[in-house]
Length: 234
Image 1 (cartoon, rainbow, N blue to C red):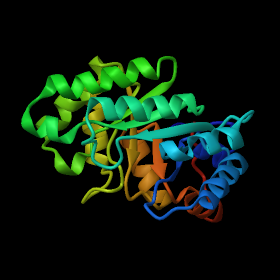
Image 2 (image 1 turned 90 degrees about the horizontal axis):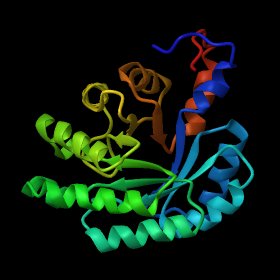
Image 3 (image 1 turned 90 degrees about the vertical axis):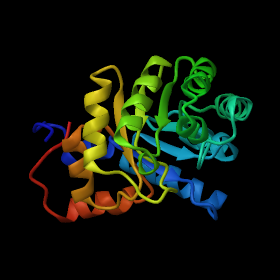
């Protein structure tokens, strides 16, 4: 559990959250609202599709909230050129961070050179920006999760991430802990997928996550405010 801090609890907790707008039927109004919420609550980032990055970056300019572009959502099947194009679209539009899904077809086929090659290619395009690599743990064995984490770190990832939220399962504390042990301080861990309550956030932070991806950021903060929290997060 994170230690107590003099930082107000709600503000400190909010800095863990990547406010996510990736539902298939979302609108530009949803993106605009999410950016306003992120600024108001002090979230770490707003995660959006490549199409939405320019809009988010403009709305978030001059704030402490990062514009985060999603590459390869939801399955990472597009391949090298597709990921490069999406990453370039995000960076050219003003993304401060990139979340990319690794190539699940290549991973499950044992083509680890392709997995790492795609990550390294996006790393080069996103030079100087935070790169988070999504494993989509629900489809992987523990051995595959470990190797995927090591491959991502070797290719230059700053974070490894549990899930997109589009798979058959989301983040678990067990996966976060496994990923945390595997990266061994060489990268950080982002928990995402199905996180909608304060209890879930606390479980992920306790397991070692330092970012939380969720579309329920406002719900979580309001629950935290209403629960009369004693613990402070830093």
